[in-house]
Length: 125
Image (cartoon, rainbow, N blue to C red; front, side, top):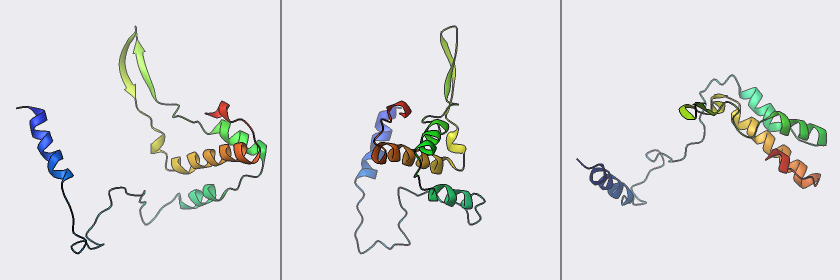
């Protein structure tokens, strides 16, 4: 059995699906790109709101945030022994429930430094 022959049929059929506007009901259509849906009871919601509401107006605070919040996951790495890769540790930062808010805060701090303060942010990239 060839993998190519069985998978191309599925891809071909999936790419030629068309929907008539009359047949589409908002309740029946599921979105392809889901926003992060949290359960009805979210323990971290106050922290999320607080992190999103932080307005940066201090240059030193923006520098501290850019230094404290890493640009890449510090836990992701390859374990290499005697020149051979044994295994790969995947990034685990996305398991953090406040990951998106922290990355957004770091981005806002970098934008503040670049736009408002006119500083070079190349050291944080």
